[in-house]
Figure 1 (tube, rainbow, N blue to C red):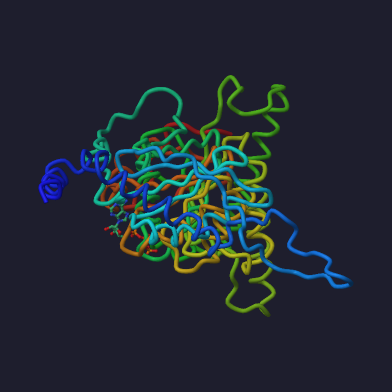
Figure 2: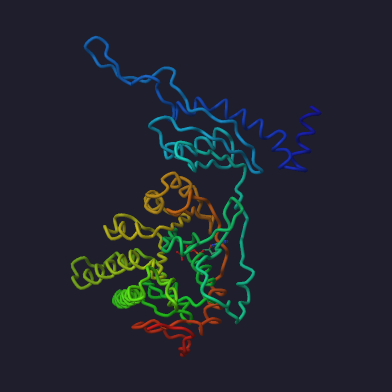
Amino acid sequence: MLWLAAGAVLRHRSPVGYWYVVGYSLTWFRITRTWRALCIERGLSVSRRASQAMVGDLIVRGQEVRPVVPRLWIGRPTRNGLRVRVRLMPGQTPEQYAQCAEALMHAWRVYSVRITSPVRGLIHIEAMLSDPLAGVVVRDPDALGAGATAPAGPPVMVLVVGVTEKATSWLMNFRLTPHWLIVGATRSGKSTLIHAIVTRFAPQGVALVAIDLKGGLELNVYRPRLSGMATTRAEAVELLEALCDVKDERTHLCNVAGVRSVWELEDPPPPIVLVIDEVAELFLVTNSRDRDEVALRDRSVALLVKLAQLGAALDIHVIAGGQRFGSDLGSGATLLRSQLAGRVCLHVADGATAEMTLGDIWPEAVVAAQMIRPDEQGIAVIADSEGSSWVRARAMFTSVDEAADAARTYSRLTPTLPGIRRPEFGGAVEDSGGGEG
Ligand SMILES: Nc1ncnc2c1ncn2[C@@H]1O[C@H](COP(=O)(O)OP(=O)(O)OP(=O)(O)O)[C@@H](O)[C@H]1O
């Protein structure tokens, strides 16, 4: 009785202390007690012998009565749960364990279970007692009342856009990962994340270009800081053609100077970041019999893929956002996805979109993405093909007013790009600070 009372007091006064002293042992007991049954039930056990044998003239197939279950290393307690390592049995993949995350979560009575595989042949099972990102609203102190002074020096292509559940900064490194795909259902936080990205690029000498086939509704707020904007399919083709010309011009400059990327040039041209809202719109046509529309669609997709394929070393980047992104959009979508190495998957409405966004690089992250609830706005699974694993993170909150404010404040820093007209805003188009061509 006394022990129970002491436990209740400790739990109330110091939840972390209670976890280390009492909670961890209880949870670890629950884990070891249920592990074998869970593995057998969820197909994570393996047979010591072949699943078929000859009995007389017959081949008999069956399941072993006492299969082998993967061995659990002793769980290491963390402040918010515990982490345990498991060696994969021959023939197993981390994805099989990821599919069982929900079953483990319920059997162990923890808030969530994550499966990652930092080393080949080994998985980490992380059981969390609560969501480390719950209630976290990250704000950028510099974004409020953005000053008129831009940072000196060349543009920094590494942006801090949020915080990960490992309490590290969520960095978008455009030098390492030049192109990004941001996918999320409506109200999941896509625009807010794009506001955060644009607000951080605005004070730097970066040329921002936008394609918004929803008539410019979403990206209009950035107009003062945009070097180019397309709101119709015809304009998108025109813009992409001009960007491809810029790409060719930069390739020529590099060839003449005998260097392999624009950063090695004596006077590097400004980075270009193309932001596309609702990228699926580029792939869809209203009337598949309308030859002109189909031709424009095919041209815009081909140009975009080409730009993403060859733009990285020329400091041309693509950020494609959308509610859904599936292979049903055509082979161009899969081709484009293979170029967009950075992936951000917010709450999505269908499993196919999560699969398309993460499945090709981190299959075990798909389940974690599908578990993001509609009310967890700004929470995403982020991954890139360069990184060692995927992680859950929360984007910084940047309101539309902050983004609009930054775009207005730094409009004078907008570079002009050859062959691309700056969009009009508030009746004025200011002279650009830096340019090329
Ligand atoms: N990182 C965040 N932190 C806190 N709240 C957020 C965050 N991101 C988004 N929200 C909340 O979610 C709401 C919807 O976000 P947002 O408009 O960015 O969604 P969206 O995916 O762009 O939706 P739509 O596709 O309908 O435009 C915001 O108004 C804001 O209140």
